[in-house]
Image (cartoon, rainbow, N blue to C red; front, top):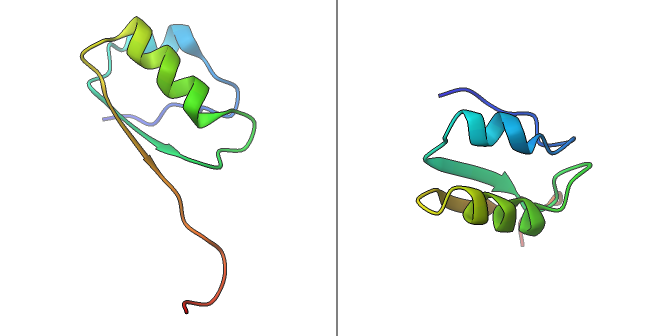
Length: 60
């Protein structure tokens, strides 16, 4: 497993690696995670995509 820098969405790198799973942050800097997920699913239909986020602030 190797992280891919998504801040500058590098489609060829992700596709060339033929990734099986992608964990994306909902609020990725420099990229729209939903668009990245859509592109991944189009290019790699077998790729599982997980979108997560963390809120910055005290727990309530």
